[in-house]
Length: 124
Image (tube, rainbow, N blue to C red; front, side, top):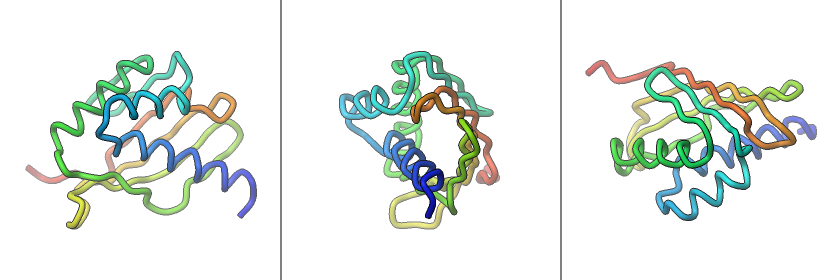
């Protein structure tokens, strides 16, 4: 695995860790270390600007889907300051119900912006 691939995987794993962290204080620490101060997040259902709003958004998703966990799907890829990776979301011990792909812009290894796409969602 080359350095770019290793870095892409490590950054994507830290991103997934934020979404899975249920302790708000620990989640804020992860966001602080992995996202720029002016970071932005947007997907078809939500948007957030800054670390505090991103943390609040993650908490809201966890409330909506209690017991669900995010997992990386496939191998993250980096090109310059851009990162692409896919993920799944579902109950811890069941089939994943939701899949998506996120595109991130990096700044010195930190996430500056993330644009998420939903690839698979339940019909209801």
